[in-house]
Image: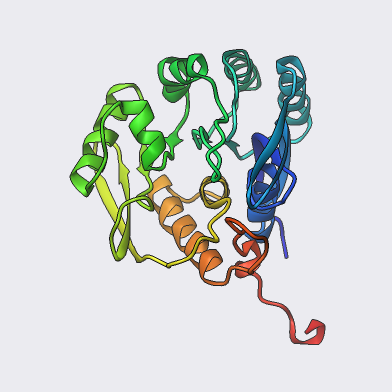
Length: 270
């Protein structure tokens, strides 16, 4: 299999392997691309929750981004967990210095188990500075509610939230509709020229740990390979849905999804 593109992932580590940098690497690899990383924090967690979070110093995060990019040029970038104002500012500085393009931001704020992963000051900086510098932001409904300060209970609310994010400077927005109570799952892609709604059947399971990380990494991978953002979102949503459908039953809490769903194993290896 020939490597299709090179993706730089800026995110936190998940010791259980279902989310964070581990999910990102698996997603990028299984979609045929090469994953590089800048780790922002080390967490001790499993499917039942987060036990501890150890932040990586902002200078070391910058070193990872800049030294890696200087040698192997990323075709796109995925940004995940950024826990403080200092880290966000360092990442912004390194992105500018390294002249990185095609940036996908997953505004990770709360872990599946409810642990807060970013402080309030950092959320303000993310809104004022970071949103304007990325090509796509991919909040779920709780994250979109925090960023827009509106309650989201319908597709119309999702559209209104997307408009607010565009007014804040976002170029493109994908709001994930998994938290709405409905039979169908609706994700909305919006920019100033178009709106697209991706509709899929909702799968009834608690094993969805790492879906947001996986989706944003998959979008970055497809976009890094030359697909449009809209098409990248469509393909990435399909990949994540198949990963949920074929999920392994690991752990006692919110279990992981199957990042290997895109693989076809040659008969001689079965």
